[in-house]
Figure 1 (cartoon, rainbow, N blue to C red):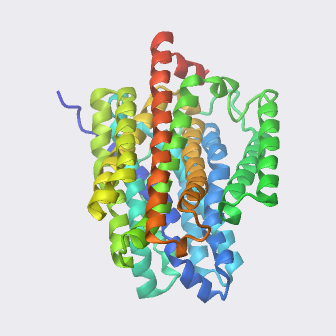
Figure 2 (figure 1 turned 45 degrees about the vertical axis):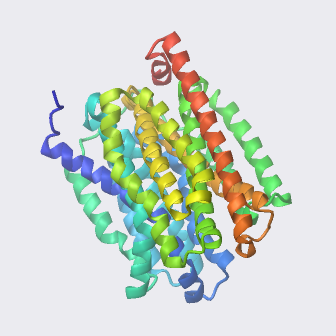
Figure 3 (figure 1 turned 180 degrees about the vertical axis):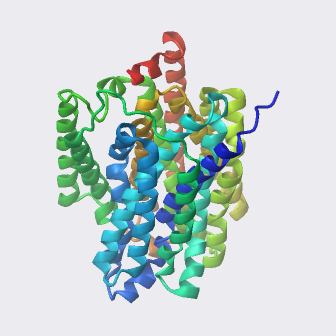
Length: 475
C-alpha cells in the first residue's frame, strides 16, 4: 500500500527546505563562471578574485558543524530563518559591493548563511516527516543540490551577458525572499529548549580554526606541497588535537565523545568523504579530458559536463523512493557499487568510444552517487534524537565539503602526475588521456575502499544490534 501523501502544509514546508538547499548550492557554483568578468571589473589578478569563491567555501566548511549545534540549542526554525535572511542580505551586499575586498567579505557572510541552510535543512526532515518517508525527502534535497550545481554555470553566463556581474548575486534576492516567506509560514514552531543544553563556543572556534587551516592547505599553491602548506597542515593537526582534548572537558561539547567513538557514524562520514573526493575528480579532470584529448570546443565541453548534474537531478527523487522501499543500508552498498562501475567506466570506456563512452560512464556514476547520498544521509539521520539532529547533519555536510576540497587538490595532483606535466593547459591529448585513465583507476579504488567500509560497518551493526550506533550517538 503506497504511503499517504504529505499534508499541504508539510509539502510547502518541504518546499522551503528544498529552496534553501537550492540557494546554498547555487551560491557555490554560480560565482566561478564570473571570475574573469570580476577580474576585469575590479582590475584585479585572477589569484585575487579566486578569493570570491574561496571565502564562501571556507565559511561554509569552517562553520557548518557549529551552526548545526546552535540550531539544536536555540531552535532550528528561528536559526534557519536567520540563515536564509542572512544569505539574502549578503547576496545584496555582494551585488552592490564597490570594491573587491568588500565583495569577498560579503561572500564570507553569504557562506555563513549557506552553512546554516545546509546544516538545518536535513535536520528538519525528521521534524516534518515520518521515518518511512525520510528517504524520498533526502532524495529531494539531493536533487535540489544537483540542480543548483548544474544551473549555476549556465545561469551565471546568461546573467553576466545580459545584466553584468552584479546579477550573479542579485538573482538570489527573489529566491531568498520566497524561501523566507515559505519557511516562516510553514515550518513547525521550535520545541522548548533542551534542559541543560549549552553551546560550546571554545570548541566551535577551535574546530573552525582547524578546518580553515586544512582547507587553505588544500587549496593554495594549486595543490603543490610547499612550506606554507606544510605549516597549515601542521597547524590544523595541532588545533584538531586541542579540540579533541577540550571536548572531553566541557559540560556541553560541540561533538559528544560518544559520537566521536561511534563506528557507524565514522563509517558513514568516511564513505561520504571518499565519494565526494571522487565526484570532485569528475569536475576537475573532465574539462581537460574533453577539450584536450577529445578536442571538443567550449560549448560542447559545457554541454557534456552538464550531463552529470542533470542525470543526478533527475535520479534524486527516484533514489529516495528506492531507499524508502528497500532500506537505507542496503542501498548504500548498491549506490557504491554503481559508482565503482561508473569510475571504472571513466577509466576505460572513453578510450574506445570517445564522448559516447564518457557520457555512458557518467550516467552510471551519477545515479549511484545520488542513491548513495540519499541512503547514507537517511541511515545516519533517521534515528537521531531531535536534540542532536542539527550537529549530526552539520557533520555529514562537513565530511562532504572536506571530500570536495580534498578531491579538488589531491585528484588534480594525481591527474597532473599521471599526465606527466605541471601545466595541464599545454599537455598533449595522449598525456591527458593517460592521466584520465590513471586518475579514475584511483577513483575506482577509493570507491572500492568505501564499499569495504560499508560492508564491514553493516556486518558490525548486524552483530551488535540495529540501533546500537544511533542510540550511542543520541545519549
